[in-house]
Length: 63
Image (cartoon, rainbow, N blue to C red; front, side):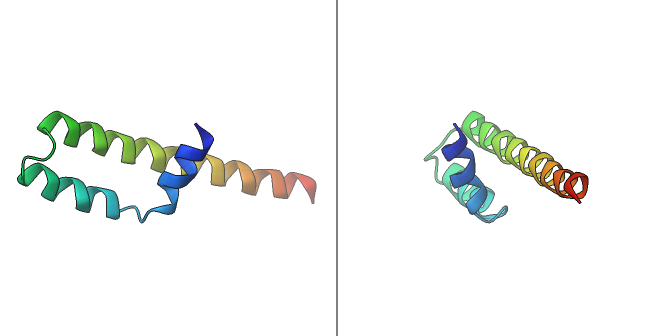
């Protein structure tokens, strides 16, 4: 699971939605898949923010 999140994080935050929208327009994916993709992007952004916060917090605790 961690590897999947790290791979997802390496993508630009706008890159995935920018690929999902045309895929939906061309009926490659369903509207439901577009919504799930957007939810995943949001979840990864939240997780990334939490992880970054915890990294910064642990650095200040060690100083």
